[in-house]
Image (tube, rainbow, N blue to C red; front, side):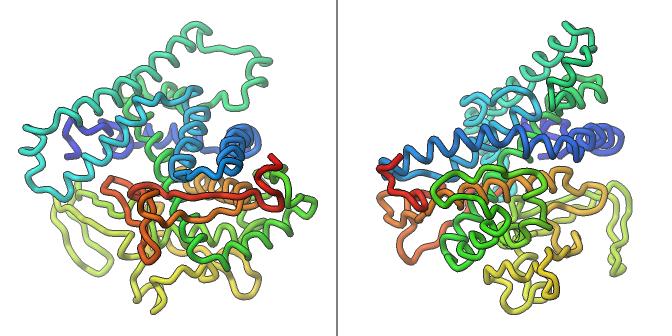
Amino acid sequence: MVADPRHWAGNGIINADGELWRIQRKAGLRFFSNANLKTFIDEALPPILDDTERFLDQAASRQDVVDIQEVFLELTTRLMGKMAYDRLASLPFSKAFDMASGAIGDRFQNPFWKIKEFFLGAPLRRAVREVKRFGNEIVSAAVKIRTKSNGAKSKSAKDADPLRDNLINSLLDHIPDHQVVADAAMNYLSAGRDTTAQSLTWTLYLLLRHPQHQEALMEEVAKVFPSASASSSLHGVTYESVLPTSLPYAHSIFTETLRLYPPVPFELKECTTPTTFPDGTWLPEGSVVIWVPWAMGRSHRIWGQDSEDFRPSRWLNRVNSMVLQKSPYEFPVFNAGPRSCLGKKLAELLAVAVLARLMWRYDFSEVLEKKQGGCGVDGERKSQNSLTLPMEGGLPVKLNLRGRKNDDI
């Protein structure tokens, strides 16, 4: 599957090894610098969240049912598009991307996937072509801009562009092959778009099922933003205000969600050389190793007898209430070692910023009626088949403004 040219990931960082992987990671390291992270939270995110709130305000006034997973996906798509490529993803691309991810995920469960796709694979092939087309379009547009400016900008132009070191330019600076650049761009978009939106969806779902943690979150936000009004938006959310040292309980809520609903529920790697595990297990070259963060996050041996309970406090130091750090080999949600996730800090800060603003402004309630997309009073939401962990059917909610009547909008 990995070498299959029909796989949308192509030669991007997800599939790459050796020098091809190293140059893509180097480009990503430059993009995810602390300076850029601050710009993402302080400058790029607020106007997008403002648009999100305007949409949700209208939904609240009409008492519409909203699929909050789609709202989060729209938010992360816009943010990643602006930050990484200075453009928005098209609707055809988004639909093709989702379809391709689901179809590729099916390959892990169907040993006869090649036969199936030979006869029924036309939709997947069209989806992969659309994903590739969009990736090539991004690269072509970036190359034209660079050529027009001869790769140079005046000092004033640089100062006016807080994200001048966007991802596509960083990739073009390091990789001469434009097809590889396009593949890498799509890989990074997948990592930043889908996983964060899906994790936010599962986080809100768990908060709705455990309202006591909503109350604790609101108390923490109120302490960090003492001048915030309960009847208005939570303005002033900055990079510094969403760090783990500022909002430790919010971070613990998000991390506990990742433990129970890891955005990449299973991983696999192939040994390129003979390998010996720390316990002495020897693996020959070509061996495939699979591990399942979904199961590891529910292990009684690792997390205790309450491993299947949603308990954010397990991530807080009992002495100073600061966020605890677990070994990435014990908690491999963001991978570990040389292939640890470059976007880990961005995902955490973005999630906490979004949670703080939206939970402060809205009182969400889960729609349980099946005819409106709910799962029933006694039901639980399930994940959809995919490479990542989208919620099947989305998360239908209704919402009210905290501290105001909806007809006051």
